[in-house]
Image 1 (cartoon, helix red, strand yellow):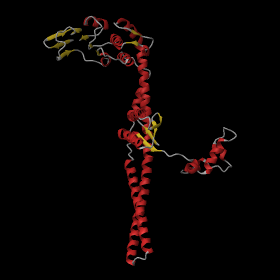
Image 2 (image 1 turned 135 degrees about the horizontal axis):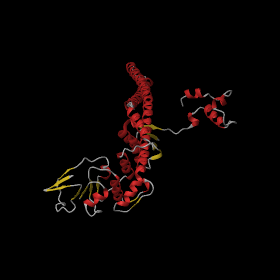
Image 3 (image 1 turned 120 degrees about the vertical axis):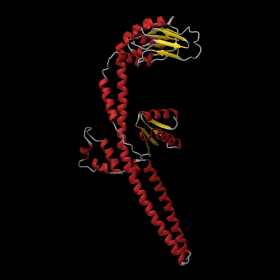
Image 4 (image 1 turned 30 degrees about the horizontal axis):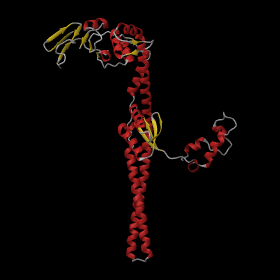
Length: 112
Length: 269
């Protein structure tokens, strides 16, 4: 999908109009951002927006997120284990001490 | 106030052209009168198609009396901050184009290397003459060298794009702040208009009763119900206007009555 984010009132207004006019191509709208279908029409609409509003429009492309293909097992396990922790008020760094789970600083450096 | 149309001259606080025999013809009109003010934007001309933004009009009346809104300091401060913002222009289009081109070149050259390798192997397999094999080896070496260059360029283009994207993100943070500030200003302006309109609303309600037309005024500006012309006449009545209001409606029997009821100079068409 294409993620379109606007950064000005004008761009935001145009995005709103596009979403209203092309409902089929708009997957989801969140105020000043929206997800377009990754079709030629989606790209055309996104690029038109950028032609009109220049740097006030950001366009990114999303990929389906498959945690089993994209994320190391350690990270997945850590997330699941943390959610199952006994005391809800324990912050993650404290929770990870003395375990195999990765530290926040380590994960911050790791690229998917 | 003085008005000249064709060969006729009219003077006074109330000028009536409604019965002018030449009215149906487009003529140049020359008028001498005090300059219109900001309130004339709201009630300067009232025709049968008249519409009014009542809250804005009432707020303008309040402002004309020097009434200020509690939000005025905040509005001024927010506008000052907005004017002081400077937004860097960051363009990543060129970097993207460079990366796309580099990727295409690399792919093309990869294919060329594969083809050159294939040709070399084919020559070896059928034991082709030595010089043909040497030529094919040279071709492969050359293709490999150019592929290596293309790979380097693609990596450099990728790094350049990453750098540009980081700069673009910082620039967008600023734009987001500007947007939030603009929204804040609009909210403050709306709240100010509401306060100002409320300050004169009771007076407006009385004025609506005193002008021809139907309109119900509740207790606050949002509750007015009735036609816009009645509301416009009400606003004209509570406003202090030096320049005339132009009426091309037939609610009053004549311009003089209109001027008296609205307490403003009137030109009636």
